Length: 213
Image (cartoon, rainbow, N blue to C red; front, side):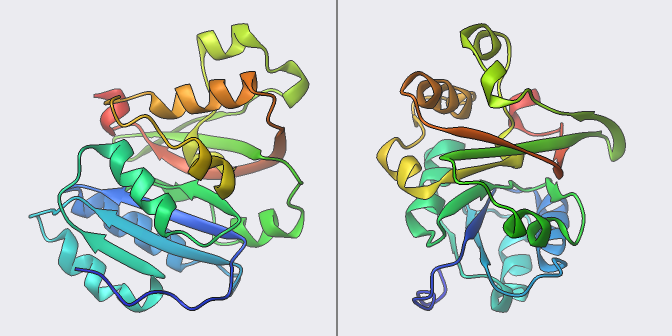
């Protein structure tokens, strides 16, 4: 089940939220995006994996704030993320999965006012564990990204804006249960795509997700 197709105007950013039976986290994410101060310039898409915990009802209640949504079985988190990318209209994609939140109500307005021209634009995240705020994680400037960096760690998808055309050309590997986003970023780096860092806290990252199970 899904809403009618969105209007033709292209937003700058498409926020894609993937959910499966995480009603509490989904509500937090929906409220975080709905609270953004800027009007226009972005859209929100929800891809639900046929949840049975009340998530679909929560999505319906917020449907007028969403560009589109779908609830149906999928083949895993990266299949769901690729489905969201295919439905998106924005120039850039931000994957903000259920449980993750934007850092504050003004973050999209701030980011769009000074958006750099790069294929992948990344900021900082704040780690949350069991609802408690932890450290802020920042990444080095692009000139310090090197093979050893990617071997040890990665940039966080919930604080990274990916040019949609790049994602459609190289979708996430759906054979992976986790780390397909890490593979995507490393391969984009090796292929010579451009990266830019912005000095802003973008999101709060929920450490209870699948990657930290």
